[in-house]
Image (cartoon, rainbow over all chains, first blue to last red; front, side, top):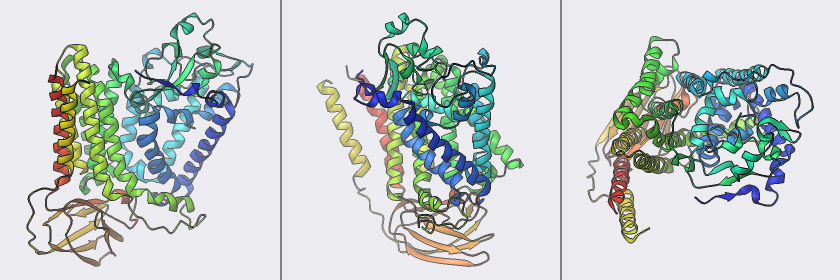
Amino acid sequence: MKRFELTGLPLVKPLLKNRWPQLLLLAGMLAGFLFAILAGLIGTPVGSHNFGIVFTWITWWAILILVAVPFFGRGWCAVCPIPLPGEWLQRGAVLGPIDKKPRWPNLRWPNKLRNIWLQNAAFTLVALFSSVILTSPAVTSIVLAGMLFLAIGLSMVFERRTFCRYLCPVGGFIGLYAQAAPMELRVKDRRVCAACVGKPCYRGSQEGYGCPWDVFPGGLSKNTACGLCLECLRTCPSDNIAINTRPFAADLQTPLARPDEAFKAFIMLGAAMLYSAVLLGPWGALKDAAYRVGSPEWFGYAAVFLAVIFGVLPGLFRLAAGRHFTAFATALIPLGMLFWAAFSLSFVLTNASYIASTLSDPFGWGWNLFGAAGLAWQPLLSGLVAPLQTLALVGGLLWAARTAQRVGVQRGVSSAPVILFCLATTLAMLGLLL
Amino acid sequence: MNAKVFGTLSLLFVIGLVVAFVPLPVRFASTGTQRTIRIEAGRYAYTPGEIQVDPGDTVTLELASHDVVHGLYIDGYGLALTADPGQTARLTFVADKTGSFRFRCNVTCGAMHPFMIGRLQVGFNDWLYRSVALAVLAVGGLFMLRRIP
């Protein structure tokens, strides 16, 4: 498969190896993140007029799901501010490595938890409360602050970026879908890594830190766990690290082998379908049930939600895929990613006009910083939403079916039942969105 | 890529374009019926949440709010009306565009405001059926291509 080394371009590698551009970008992101938390706590409780809600669930979400994940894989993780304060404290430094022994225990994360089951649970938990989180600025702030403090706390006890790797509710699905992205960080020659003494990319050196994601780059074959933090680019003494463009879905040539990742695919697929019904559908009783957390209706909604993502969808898929359940779940990666794109297109374009007004009045206090606070709500490109959704859903189906066919050939079994499963879920999604 | 595969792909592409864009040969006769539909708005929901009219109908929407000020904006038509609590607002229009259109609250009414959504269907939701046909064509095409040696 054709690859093009981006780090081979003039200026790219020096720019990426230099810590300052990354630090400035991350500091800006951290400032925005803290401002979003502040706005949620002290600003108006009306979500559509609060920076915390509009910039988290419209701007950031649109960039993440429509651009960053499909095209840059874990590109968001490279600039995510959440691990930053904890990492600074853990290292005792903001910029380069220092010659000091860490003051913290730096424990290894337990072997039994070295998977994404906790991330699956964290995402599911957030998803169950999403109607409140998405619409209430204070709750959004509490969730964002909770993630920040959890990341800091874990950095004080465990080594590297434990929160990102094993707990972040967003990182789990980014890692899963990053496998489809046309970008990767890989070593140029594995033999160089095998012969390398000391493995500074993993253990660190004067040039940089050991991989914060606990990955040995010489063994990287998928995008799932590499957070594109660029430390290995700095530490490799043999200039053996490259960032490449590549064909879409290159990692999907090798089917999934882990049930935690397979279930992540079901959680994401099911959540996209359920959100489409609850948030974008015309059924008021469903919205009410999802919003009234703690009421009997909400418990019913939660039970259905859990039953669909952990029972109905995997159960039907099991009937289709048989004992190749995990391998065939690879097909759900492009399918789910484009389900999310189709779902997000609708509410992002509908609510994008709030971005300008919220920038002008981030707390909803009647400010008008840029003269845009009074802009009336107006849906954007509403005539294009349905065709774009069809394009995403049918494109995702085609991509999923091709992936299933490849798995079927590798395993010597028919992929037809899995493709029919993908078709059935796509038709359901079309019915919900169009 | 061999000639058979290329030919099949080209054929599928042309069929796809036909399915997606060629106007339907059936024209729905406009009945021009006058319809008045009352919609109750309250707590992030419209009742009824789904309304169906025929193409060409002259539709009067009566929007009544139970709790706070609610609006109703119809995607695709770009029409809007606003109802104060306890009062009924009216909007009359000719349903001259067919398909499925979301209508949504355009007055900030509370937490779930962005998701206060209903659906207006005018005649036949042909884009849904075209999309379903495209999905089936995509899968069918893949099976066809696999059979080519």
